[in-house]
Amino acid sequence: MRNLILYKKVSSTNNIIKEYELETIVQAQSQTAGKGRYFNTWISPKGGLYFSYKTKFSENIIFTLIPIIVGIACHKVLQTLSSERIYLKWPNDLLNEEKKKIGGILIEKDKNKNLIIGIGINLFAQELKENKNFDNLKIKDQNLSKIWILSEIEKEISKYKQDFIKNKDEIFVYWKKASLYKKGDLISFLYNKDNKISGEIIELADDGRLLVKVETEFLYLDFSQIRNIMLIPS
Ligand code: BTN
Image (spheres, protein in one colour):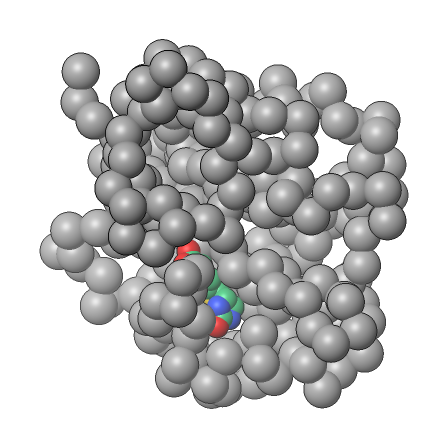
């Protein structure tokens, strides 16, 4: 287990961790200004698991693959804890069977190019009951500690960090099984800010980008360029 620093309440663990050295994890019971992707707020009431891990991956991993790897690491751990099926929505949203969001990942870089991997898992938050888009993970063993879950996730991330090349094929096989999207599914999304586009899923590219066919053209989607991805019912 890494250096683990526990806080009761912080603004955002992704900010607080900047003061700490490499290979530290900062966990908080709640966040007052939890950050989501695309400058969204991550609602972080007491009960949930919120942590950030400062680390480095080997130089030969392309940055666009890191969210995919971290998403798979979280999925592996959460799927073993839950009685319901969990999906990965590209690049790394974690959804439950009802397609409600149970977890999210925000990856940033600090000024020294270290990775700040921020993970939020909705666990026992009363506030999420009746929410249309978010839900708590349904866990079989309600007595599991959040620190245990966090350390299992960190172990999975570290496995990929150490031996990425050896695990490369497994990553793509795993993603296909866990992915909400299947080849041929139609999605709509906002591209480069506000352009609403629809396209057909082709595959997860080698570098973690999503290959989509838009009319007659093929487009590689980078997670930093697109948001609001929705499945179009067939
Ligand atoms: C998303 O929009 O899906 C990403 C959500 C990431 C939330 C986590 S909670 C721990 C860490 N601290 C933050 O402020 N955000 C991340």
